[in-house]
Length: 520
Image (cartoon, rainbow, N blue to C red; front, side, top):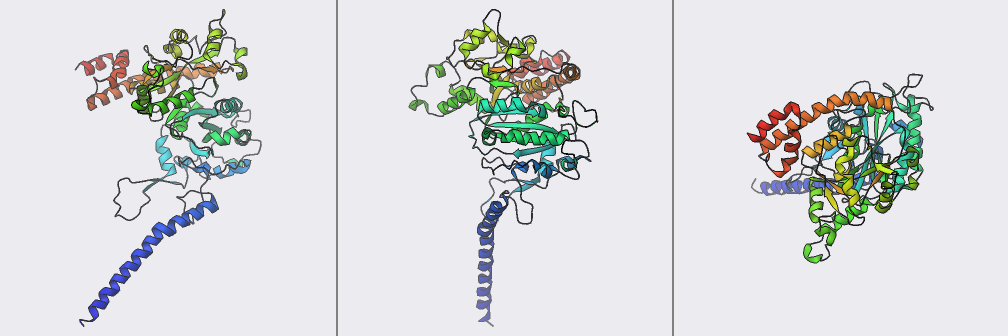
């Protein structure tokens, strides 16, 4: 019997080694190879597995810069179909995709694990829980093939199907990364394949594919995210969604979608009908590169850096930290008919100044008749700074209706999604950013010009009326929320909370509460 035990022990050891070898080979060798082969064959994700339908760029939440080639077949409308779409909520976000969240600091001794998996529908339903429902968000419906550098500036914008022409002009002028949310109307209880080929929703989707194929700049630079909803701003005679339908104008939802899926650290929140006239993207990239060079190796940290210009290391640091946003001043032609053709727009500050100082002026500040919207930019100071100085100056007289176009960190506070329609939506984004500690700095060498178009004045009038009350309540709520947060963190009397202290005491309904909180 004594001679049997060594053999039993030897057998157990061999069995253990065999199991360990099989497990290790399966997890670290065969599984990656199998997933890679599956990806190559199906153009899917490396997180897909045999037996599951391979994913595509149109259903992808991956933020990797690598992307499969884009198939522009108009029949791609069909994969968007879902027999449960829009019948109830939350199936409006229905998807079988899983998003894997890795677990950092996991012990290397533990068996391999892909991390925690969340269904795409769950993640998106939480991310956009305040949207008007049903609304279906499809990230990366088409993903650009171009690489995006982390320190680049991505334009984030939103487009409805009646603005494709002006969107193409933006793509051709910018020639850099763009993350766009495009609304496509989809009637309730409908699927794309069930609609007639000439239905406005099918036409809108086909027009999107035609637009994307019209220039190689789209496939190189533009990530498209879809927002599908039955909400429209107009109905055709047949009571079906019109091509002019704007999805309830959920502008802040769409802004958040575009920013969330931008692939660079910095973003420019821009309306699609503005022309990019100067190279502010290059200015930011140059400033970031200059700031990365150690001071003792960069004797020419130039005059403009010493003067606190955009090349200042402090400015770049504040931009990264989300305590500064760069304002690109906005202008428009005084005579609307002169602002239609972007090819005639000035592309340097000297020419802009000539047109602005002409008598009578040819160009003026954007929406000059609505002073609160852009006057905090201080256009007179902007005019007084000579071109080519690369100077940056701080917005000293902020007020809550201010809504400039800004370059900012992707990680600043998000836009409140309760705002639908015209009036207050962008101002609410900028107001909360300001309360959170973001200060605004104007780029004195750069500018944007609005491309003239007709406004839906009647719709805007009604929507502004409803949003005026919402914005008033929003300001009070945001002030109390941020001041309480700063109080709890013990930083209420620090520089970070200065914007909130100064702005919130101006609000009549909460002025007493704010005073008591600040002064104890």
